[in-house]
Image 1 (cartoon, one colour):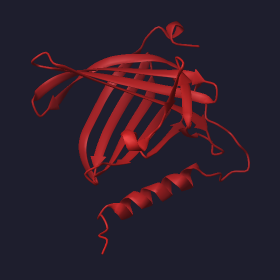
Image 2 (cartoon, rainbow, N blue to C red; image 1 turned 60 degrees about the horizontal axis):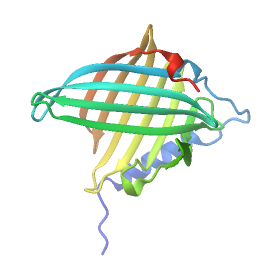
Image 3 (cartoon, rainbow, N blue to C red; image 1 turned 120 degrees about the vertical axis):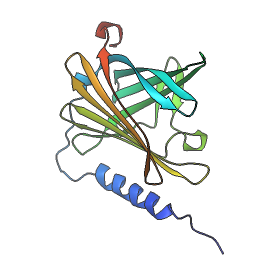
Length: 193
């Protein structure tokens, strides 16, 4: 007899909700304007980790792409003992029939290399972006190897001189991390293509 994971229903409800959100509910195709977000943003914040406080240096790069836009974000965590852990994520989005809703492109070519989303190698199974006014929100959901369902939300709101980042991670319905920080907009001329 096959046992069902207790969070399988939650996972499929989330899948259904995202599918409904992304489908065409309007006969008129329109897209939110992502142009104001294009640029390079950087900042730092202190966070509490299991081994003590650590500084996180954050960078967000939003670029125009052939079929929409891409977002690349990186985090360098600098621990008190000097060790550094670096993570970088990249995703390209394309508009849907629904205004303000973007889904990941199947792949994008970057510096001669094809980058593809692959859930079997740690990429989220569900990704989407919503742009509403001055806020770009990226949702990433994944069923982890240990059966834990995790949702990460990156809410980036444009402010004078940069953007305000609000990040949250929820595992099996329990909030496990929240970070808020203002990022300064860097020299835009260096990042536009």
